[in-house]
Length: 403
Image 1 (tube, rainbow, N blue to C red):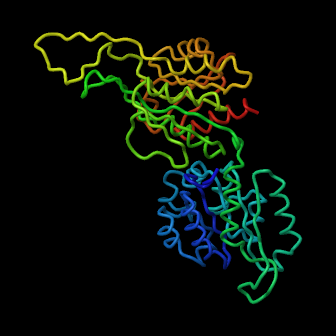
Image 2: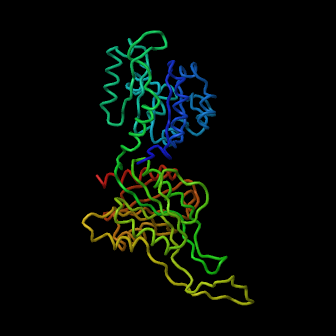
Image 3: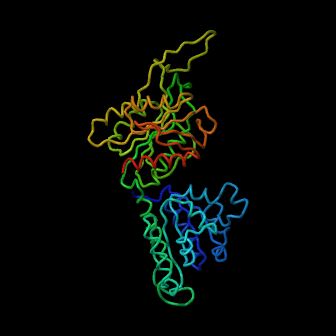
């Protein structure tokens, strides 16, 4: 990808060393590369640079204290861990490396890191003697033995205390380059993902249409998480309002016919096709070219079916030796499992994600969801929480199938 950090959520965790002041420039450089950045700081880091400075630079509150009622009102350390696609520890001091290796959770940085499951970039910075110490090297080696940890630096040069040697924080360009490399090294690196999201609209006349309340939030969450896992993602998006995640190829459509026309040329090249759009199933048999005026009595509109985008795409790719993994969505109001499994079989899908949209917190427009996922053998996953959390759980299942 040409812009690997575009649209990524990056947590910068700052340790208590003199190089902490360089984290200010790191935040700005990551933002210039298109990332959204949030900051966590150890108590020691707050002695070198103020949280207010990092808040002003990042545009987000800075997480510094797990015992602060305001910061932990919504379990701040867990929220940061769920939000982030990548953690960067800069500077990673000898003390911070030791505590991370030991699995401690005694400050804002280590508690958030304990709850995080994604890639971590370590940027050590310390005095040469501390860097050369056997325990520091042992701790670093133990962390790097885990695939999710990478290291950049330190480099040799004049240190703040006047010594010359290894221990300087890596250069900013090298930090950003290492972060960019990690951003495309997830389990979906090299994969192409096609996602449909949002509603479609079928116009009756120039001012009226048939549609549904979908906001596209679940489909966009699926796209955003796939991007964070390293995939190249194309989203075919119906008419929704509000900002969309950055770093995605976006194709805007209005009707079911337009959705079909956008999907069909792209589906064969995809490794995964996620059909999360809420397609309007009917359209008017005849569309009035002018606004229809109200009459005094009942009105009759003849409806016909719109194309079944998922079934058509599935039929197109099923005979291919290498076809995408097909994931459908089923929004139901009753007998959720029954209808979802019928749709799974009829459209020859690999997985189907079903939810009861009549339930509070699981319907259209909500920021949360509760889903059941089925394959041909039956139920394989239950997930609930924010739509991003649910998307992460679904992608965990998908990536295991791809592997």
